[in-house]
Image (cartoon, rainbow, N blue to C red; front, top):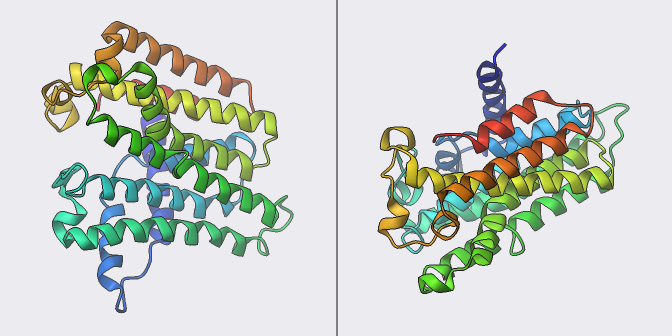
Length: 305
């Protein structure tokens, strides 16, 4: 089986997991639930739940206790996109070729849909506790699940993704010379990498990885997330409309300072390669080995869309 064939199978499995945990569209809250489900069904690569699942497998995880967390992290990622698209943020009417949530349901319902996805993510993650009594012989306890929930919260909160979003918004009002390499790295490390760290660490925790390996998975997530975002900046310079499905050169036209504009294209490419190689090398030395995860990391940071 080729990598692409295996990836397709895994993404279909993840879609089925997400669908299983979506709320039922009924009652007085039906409209906001419809908006939530519309948002999460809009597609995407499902990168974070896939990384979580593969990290779980890397350390020998076999049970389905990982599934509520896989759905939860995609809900958190989706809520961040719903809020990014709002008129008060990026004011986008289309994402992945479909109308954005607020464009379909209105701005107020768009805000509520994002809020709903964030809260429901933690409600969904807590459903892992219900599985403790039905997974015979597994080395799980409530404290392990609580720790995973803590990681889910911290990496997506003010010291993680939201902190990065805050810095990104404020950077838009700075003069170009005020947007330093240090600030750009902070934005990338928190707005993008933190949720990838989140996925890999939760997979490792639930599979029983030790503290040393947990720290290594956090480093892998940092490297992959930073490389992923730098590659985005590169594609905005070198990509094509056909590849990306959106206009290229938008950062330069909007006067936005990026990793590429500060460090240059060649250094940016070299950094992507170095970060991805480091991540793969760390993975090779851990757990039971997961060749697909290593290939997926390379796939992510070398993508053309």
